[in-house]
Image (cartoon, rainbow, N blue to C red; front, side, top):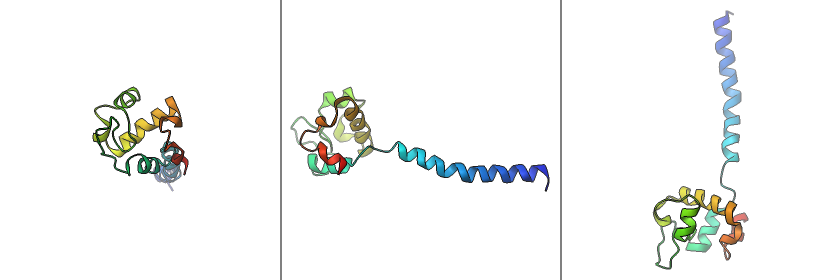
Length: 108
């Protein structure tokens, strides 16, 4: 076997080893809990809800909390994923008490 073929096979083998490890890293950055359960409790699971009560989106953000934790625009117009990203920031800055009635469902 010549050097070129050996190098190519080594590169392919390395890619096969590294690719699954990359998936592990991505999983480690996933959301910290069951945000769908919190949203179900807060808003009936409606990520686009705006009832006029001053809280918006599936996780019922106030505009000030939304903006303070990295949200732009209004929560109820953001994607589920964006709401969860801002919720992760809110969890880090305020703790589970940011959702006093429903926060415990995050770990269900």
